[in-house]
Every structure is written in structure tokens, then in C-alpha cells.
Image (cartoon, rainbow, N blue to C red; front, side, top):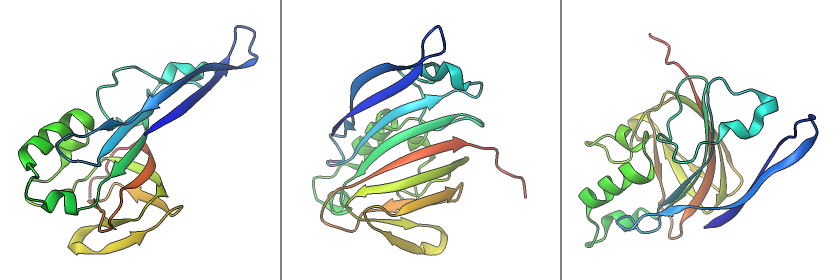
Length: 180
């Protein structure tokens, strides 16, 4: 999927301007057909509003933000049937995920595929398709186009039980986990 990214900013006199307009492309998986992700924007902890274009860093190394940082992601999830097909190679797909979703893929649980926990508060919107959000004990909620998700650092997995890809946007806000 390709989409335009339009970034506003300020010129030297403080006037609002379009700082950049470019085309973004989701990185598509070879070993997990139908999976794609794009890191659209990232802000450092010390970002300030007047310097709005300073947040983006090409080659951002992690999709998981540190406390006070943010990430804006677009993710396309293939149907779960892709992972149950005879041609699916879980080792190759896992290695590919480390490249396509650095900082998140390392958090996937080996014993429970797809389950992971992040130190983030996530805001998500389903753009297309249908997806199921699973939390502990296998409890799931079925989400459809335009449904909104607020994910508060819980252990979770995304399951696409449908027949078509599902695409969602997420804003991840890095947070510190409260010690209980």
C-alpha cells in the first residue's frame, strides 16, 4: 500500500508551511504473505511543537517507543489462514518480522504466537477489514472498520480470522510500566 505523508512545520519567521510531502510505502513480508507495516512518524522524548519536522528520523531503529516518545504505524494483517498453510515457514517469517517490525517482533512470545506485551499506550483505528484483539485467557473482541482501540500496555495479540487482510493505524506512546 502506498500513501502520501504531508508534514507541516514553520519557516524561519514562524509562518505555517508544508515542510514535506512524500510517498510512503508499507514494507511487505515475503514469508508472511499479506503482512505489511510502515513506520509513518516517530518523535523523540524532547520533541517541541515549533520544530515539528524534527521528529522524523529516516532509518528509525525501533517501532517500540521509549517513555515519552511516539510512533505512528500502519499495519496490514493477513488472514490467519496464511500461517496455517502448508507452505508457511515460521522461522523465515519470524526473521522477517524482526526486520519489518523491529522493537515489537522481539516481544512476540515463542509459546503463544502473536502474543506480546509493550510498554506503551496505543491508540488504534481499523481502516479496513476485520480483526480480533485477544488478551489474557483467550478473551477476544471482534473489531470492524472504523472501530477504535485503546490498548494500555496489556499482553495481547491480533488475530485475523477473516478471509481478507485487515489494515489499522496505531499511535504508540512510550510509557513506564508501574511496578505492582
